[in-house]
Length: 302
Image 1: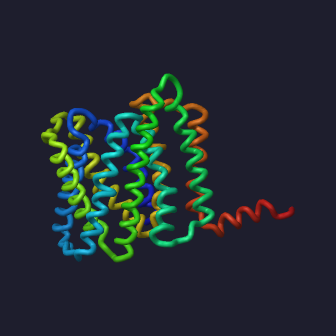
Image 2: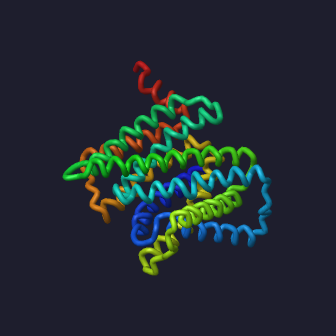
Image 3: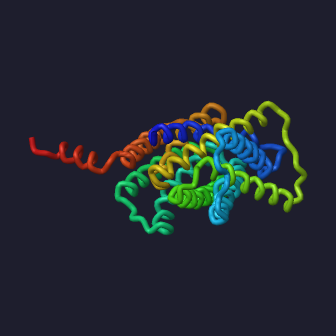
């Protein structure tokens, strides 16, 4: 089941980055995100009501879910959407892969859990591979300051996402239903985004075009309802540090779409980076005793 959730998360979230870029335009960023999570929240609540799930939660859980709404369903996406104004969507997904390292560090800070050597090795390989994937974006006549600003925004969004993972781990440890928690957290995120837009005195608008509305529905239902439910279920099953390594594979899907629609160039460096990322993935998810067995077999005297 964990493998299925992992693959589902990678495939869905790997494609959402391009859908995000399709929403950039006349509609303020925070409003596009608010529409997304409002639609996702309403959908989840309807499903839960049909299934006759108990929607009552304690005040303490609601407080945590409000924090999750800030970290996973509002502030982080504001950073990501604005970053996509400065750098290709595929590159934003590359920066998002830093969640692997940030989750390991935050897991140590908030839950006092040891950092495994396997996670460090796999994470370092992943980051090196991702650095190679960035190379094609930096080639040619590029505005370096613009790229750096986009990278900083994407990093801020990634750190918010990591903090949301820590809240998700707490919720899983306290047996909070993932779908119910997501429904409330998305609703809180929507309210935060609406409040931000009102504070900025921006009139509400929406693009009634097939492209914008199609991207909205895709981001709300597969991207949010299914994607976040699968991911946070994965966090509860295997922990945030391993679950976040799925983010290292997002760029593979996202950069393929960037190559098709945004001019990303797959050169030798990028292809090598992809192979290294995949090797890092294998290391993180291969049980340690299997790695030792393979290593010992290769080094036994014949």
